[in-house]
Amino acid sequence: MALEMTRHGLESLPDELKSHILSYLINPPPSWSWQKNTLDTGLTRSSDLADKPLKSMILVSKTWCRLVSPLLFAHLQLRLEDTDQTTPPLLAPRIKSISANFREWLFRDLGYPHDVRLPYRHVWQSASTEKAAKWTATLEQQLASLFAFLESPNNGSNSDNVQSLTIIATDELNDNGLDYIRDEVHCLIATDAFWNLLFEKLNPARVTVLAPPSKLACLLGCSMNMMDAWAFPGMAMQLVSVWREPRPVEVNDHRRSPSGFDYDMMHPVELVLEPNEYGRPAFSSFIYIRPWTHLAVNEGSFLEAYSTYEYFHKNPPGILASVGRAFRLEMDMWSVSYKAVFPFGNHIGSPLDRITYKGNSSNVRRLYVKIAPDPDDTILDDPAQVGKADITDCWREVESAYRFLTDPALRGEPDFTESGAVRELEMFGFGDSSISSIRETVASSMETAGWQEVTTNEWHSSRLLSRLSDYGNARADDKNFKQNEPGLTASDVKDIKKSLKRFAVKNTTLDHNDRRVAATPLINHMLEKYDFDTTETEWQRESLQQFARAACNSETRINKKRRERLLKQEASAQKAKTAAEEEKEDGDDGDKEERDVAEEQEGDFTEQAEVAETT
Image 1 (spheres, one colour):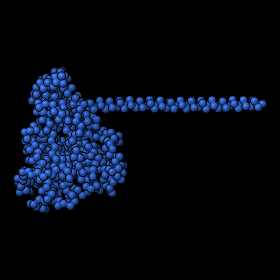
Image 2: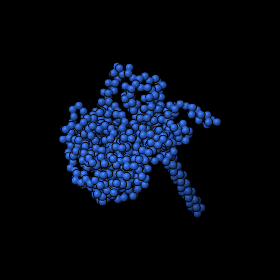
Image 3: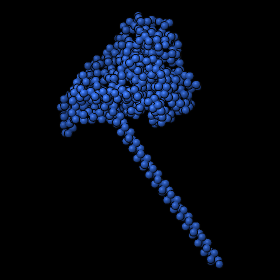
Image 4: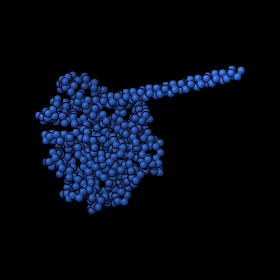
């Protein structure tokens, strides 16, 4: 009876309240957990029913199913696998148009014609190879399947509700025995047509691509050196994720169109046949299709390569070398995150140096790096992965990489400057603070450079801290600020704090960027609920983002203190237990000594008695 009354009570609620209830059940999709040591095609799967509250709500009633359905398909995945189904030639018209104007398509990025490092100057064949034709058919089949799903009236899905898209591919596209130029040209043209058609139908705020190196390069519109791929089995799957969100108050916007002076500073890269050099992705890459603000790259594990002879001469099949050249002055992207396990210092140094060096030709203001396994990770306990590797070499590469990123790069002299704007890194985060030697290296370099640790593992430059201080003072001194601020009662503030507290408890495991993305639905709901003035929405959104971040940081610190307190209690209990055991052992030893003395005295008395009797 009580259950029926509760169900009836929930059913009687208006849809607005039900939608509000559902907003608390929305969890970040599994694909957002991109910081994994081992990447596989199960990235989007979640086996725990507790991680699928929305799917459980569908079973409650038709009303809840109707409300949940648009939310249920907000995060889609598309697997680029071969099928036997027959599909209409969706890409054929676009491929024909691109092929007819090949050179215009390849060099349409005016101002960067020699920096597009694609090896296609010498040969152009109209007929595609068998491998390229198979790749084109796969793209057409999966794209048609996705559109059919979104247009179906039975599942409640809608292309307007799609917030993120994860694309998963398997099997290598390139190997050492292919016709490199012709295969790659036709595959890239098909991929260009695929992205254009996809983004005409969808407008996701986040796109994640998980694929083997050569297919990932093709999907990003760039080249990949596969000559030494055999030495890097841990890099068999790599991930690139881009997303966009409002620019926070602490990030200045220095976007502008590049000038002729900027072009003069860029060294041209000759178009050669050998794929040993990396250039920026083609202008058709999905990196440039939308104004993304964040980029995350996970290249997997380099550990097995340390077992090979002269490992430092091997060329890793990593996507970072090409993606690192993707940044341009007119791009919105201001945050970059990189994850790998024991990457070579010379592999990540040059691409990240283009981002972190003072006077860099990009708008990147924040860099996050994690390149070592956690202390509790079991990767170093696996003989198959460690092999004959010298672990000392692995840690030496990690420390030298951090020293390179935080020492000369952050304090280097600018390559070129622009009047009125200083393009340099202002925020640095790293995920290896649990390793004391790395933390000491980073802290020493940052403190010497005048940076300050504002939260755990997050450092800000003195320039940024000064700007934020000036911004806060200006807001406090603005007499009209109080008049323009939408009125919030004490009850409203209390409700906001409670909501952010619940959000923080659920999302303490996410990193800085993912927290911002996860907080977006909650913040949008707050902006609607409290009827903020549209003229003030942007700074209110920024303020709520700051509050959400502060709540997460506070919850993280509380959890850290709680763990430290539990560890201290456990250590005290263990110490008391050890002391009791030692005391017991000492007591046993004392009793034994007393027994030995008594026996010795008894023997002396017996001997004296025998002597007396004899006398």
